[in-house]
Length: 167
Ligand code: RP5
Image (cartoon, rainbow, N blue to C red; front, side, top):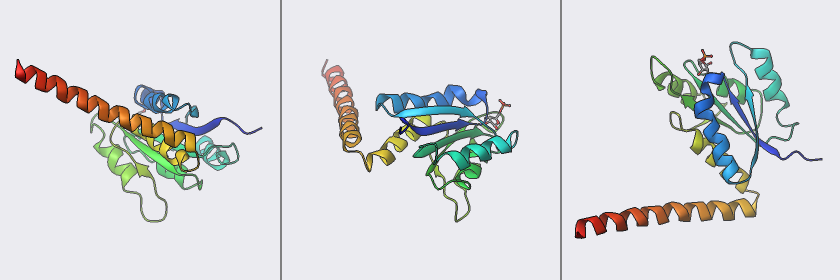
């Protein structure tokens, strides 16, 4: 039986969870199955390697990996799988995410990681949905509706602003 879990959400520590749970929120919005794992490229490299090497066989289609500081987790995972990896730079003290952003976004040629904004976990979830939508018409339909809802909110805010100005 094919697993319903399409996206693996990996984070370096439970301290990343308040940010990384936003990936799951985005995926839930589109009824995309996910699993969450804590693994660390430096504190538990064997577990990280096992997860990355087994991900495709486990039925995953995309991996989202978030970490803070010297954040090599997404790059290490990407080196051990052909699945697309989306990296989420998590902001931690004392550099507030500049360190993790540079660590994740500056992957040398050969092993790409699609990097979202610092703490941009929701967008990472959305990007995973867009990747899956390449081969899923119903997901494309849902994404179109979502985009329309974003535009409608802008119109609402604009109308509210104009109304305020008119008073
Ligand atoms: C990274 O170290 C984790 O991704 C986390 O962002 C950071 C701090 O981890 P903890 O010390 O809070 O466990 O590997």
